[in-house]
Amino acid sequence: MFAAANIRQFHPGSQVTVFEKKQQLLAKVRVSGGGRCNLSHACRDIDELLTAYPRGASLLKRVFHQFDHHQTMEWFRERGLKLVTQDDGCVFPASQDAMSVVKLLIRQAEKNNVSLLLNHTITGIGIKDEGFELTVKDHKKPFAFDKLIITTGGSPSISGLDWLKTCGHEIVTPAPSLFTFNVKDKAVTALMGLVVNQVNVSVAGTAFKSEGPLLITHWGFSGPAILKLSAFAARHLFDKHYNFSLRINWTGRHGEEEMKQQLEEISRKDRSKRVVNSRPQGIPQRLWEHLLLKAEVDPDQIWQNLGKKSLNILSGLLCNDHYAVSGKTTFREEFVTSGGISLKSVDMNRLESKVCRGIYFAGELLDIDGITGGYNLQAAWSTGYVAAMLK
Image (cartoon, rainbow, N blue to C red):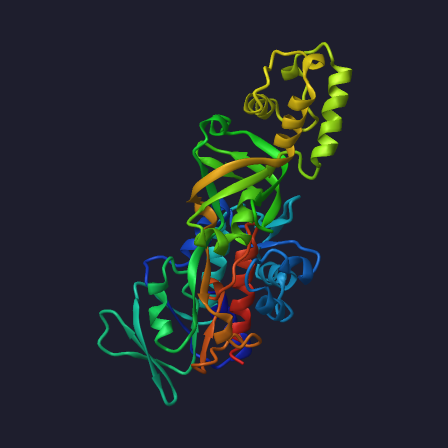
């Protein structure tokens, strides 16, 4: 829809048609950001923006230099959409309603005389000497076009991309990105609802790591730190069938030796207090009680009776706690897949297919994906805009 809304800027005399197989346009935009539509992120510059994409940064660097997040926000403002930026950098419509974005895009398409065909399922692409013919379900006569922009989004399975593979495009097997972790440890899931504001999480035995807030749920772990880790480790975790060991530093960036010193200081300062009543700064009370039980430390014991062995175990759990993850749960509001059309099959400057000239790609159909925070929609706006140039 964003591509369709911009094509006439570059090709004023063109006739543009959008095919939508469902009854409703922009279904994913309608539910994005919890129905508020986190449409971009207020990064300082392109280099900062690119750090949010586990895959596709090489392509997006070229795309963003043609149309970046600042230009995207200005595009929406110029067309009457007021925006607000949260403290965390996430950009939303001031209305806090995704329908403001949906209505604007539909209005802009209609203003440019774009034909919007709902309930039109394309079943095949015929490549002709001078363009393409689209076969549409329940239509006897094919639709003829000079150029195509394919923006069908992420596919949950590789079979959903067979129609593009048969044209000669290389396909990267789709795998989920942005998901939460299932944990069977009832002792930790009993803490559901607890938020730890700054943790460091990593996949044990790998270089994949992230930091930020963590939310404990009734099924395991969620929150920004987990979602970011799931995005960067998506391909690895897919290969592991989502069975792995999660390492958590509950203190953020503090090391075990530093935490041991803090615990020793607490034991001297609060020597007559119960261990459960004095905890390292920043550690929530419920989490502290959980870690004491995990360390087999009597919470009613007084600090002066706590031996070095217990201090070592506690400092280790605070900085290097481990949990067995056995499966994932989709973060439904921001469902994203890695994989899709391999970037090897695409001209990175024009987003045109290298094997079928005249076909362009945009959005999540490409093997690009970002972390949560407006980055995936930003990639859609930018790739849609560049594809609309039809260079």
